[in-house]
Image 1 (tube, one colour):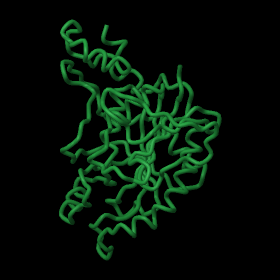
Image 2 (cartoon, helix red, strand yellow):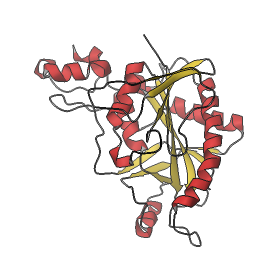
Image 3 (cartoon, helix red, strand yellow):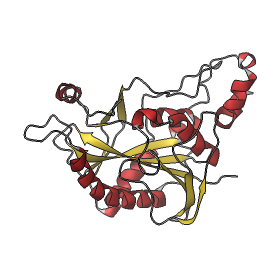
Image 4 (spheres, one colour):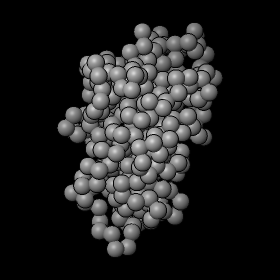
Length: 288
């Protein structure tokens, strides 16, 4: 039984989803450990949704400590077909101002201490990731931004860094020389795992600051970021609510929905029984 069709991941500044009705919490047991928090299930704009606070209630989990696999597995177990992810980012271009939203369509990985695949332990799989987000979910986010009257820019490159420290000035300028648009600490692993799990995913990147590259712009401080977050959070809630309403019910055209069909390279007879059981909710139809 599908308990939710749309997943919402709230990042820094977005710890809840006002407007949910028939609210209940559910903690999902996964083969990969505990998710960041219980999933908050309910109805929003007539759709069944599941909300997860990425960093947990009270913002207690570092980006490097996030159990991305458990978080995405939990959404899959609930029946989620698409994920609307929200996260705070720094801007790497003058044109992306604090309180602007960007909907990236590319990523650069600068992390080094994270699990970013469900495969392994006796099963080898490779999914395509040239276009790492779902164009249908991107379109939905952009339309939602227009509907609620906030700046929502389509496309751009998101640099995912390890953190928790912010960039050095040299790093910030290096990423700018690559043509990157925004920088954050969380979204790449979500995108990779959502693709493996055949969930259509995109992220709404909320610009909080100019990182540390901009001449005349003070080094990033937590209090500066928090001030902008309050504005971003209010706008993000409106955008997500509109996106839930606008999300197509038929996602069969999304490349994510069949991403793992030809991914598994391992002879099915050689896959350990325990591994098959662990991945049943994700790839059961491909493991027989």
